[in-house]
Length: 417
Image 1 (cartoon, rainbow, N blue to C red):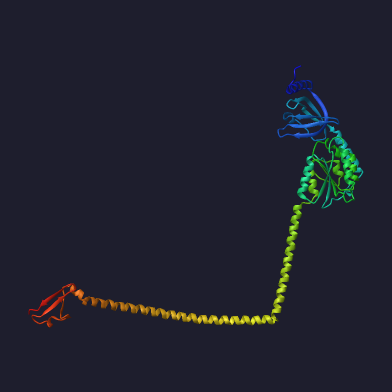
Image 2: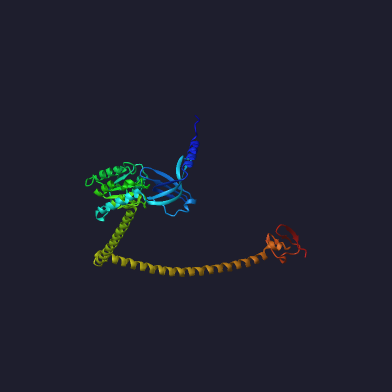
């Protein structure tokens, strides 16, 4: 036998289904619906035992006359097709019409009416939440994203809280029994030292059948009978369940439950900062007031204090001493000015005298130079001397010898006439 490839067998199944179920009509309840941005509509149709995927492409969706919502019971006209890459079959919808409310929606409304008549939803039965919870029982799946979201928000908002996780089935068979059992377990500690301040029942979003455990009457009875305050934090903001009506507080999402329950530590830190600032400001004002009062008392005692008067006289003496020193300094400065004026005059007169002497010296030097023998010799004059003494020409007799001398030479001469 030849082995078929996965794509081959999916293609053969697709051929058989599409040729066999070319025109079908299916009745069921919408459990999920998604309108894609492309215009295609993806939905899941279910009954009490099974579900099937459906798609209505953009061309057929344009002629759709109703707004599809979860819980609607509808009639779908179309054909079967197989998506070969994943081996999944789906209904290709040609038209969708209303067929009345789905069975789950009818059961939901019936139970809601019944419990409302029993007073389960009355505000008088609601218990208030503690302002600063210390112990919280968290009923959710240990592997779900809701648990991580709630713990993250709790850690961010308020660290002074102890959270105990009760691992709880939140969908499928046994979910309602698991929820009831853990609710009773958590509530059994009420009134003891290990009791919880609040119980948070939570899980993330999903289809109506996945979330149906929170619409069960036994779960509503367990919530109503609990002595511990309970927050129902199930699904998304638009989802509303029986547990939301019965619980003391309904949170739109699991994360919002922690935001509603736990105070914001940053806000209280800000309040504490403001209180500290107010306290320090008041203390500072009081210290200033007391300091001013003490200063006034000190001034009062200064008026009658002998020591203070003694120091006042000392201060006066210092002032008079300073005044005397200032006066003496003024006299000295005046004398210094006069001295500097006289000194300046003397310097001026000395300069004048020096200039006068310089002039006399230069004049005498000029006369001296004019009478200097050396100067005369350079012009042809000679010195007459006899017997080693200078003399005039008239002192020399005829035929008497004498010397004619200049600077460098000396000549022996005789007077002839």
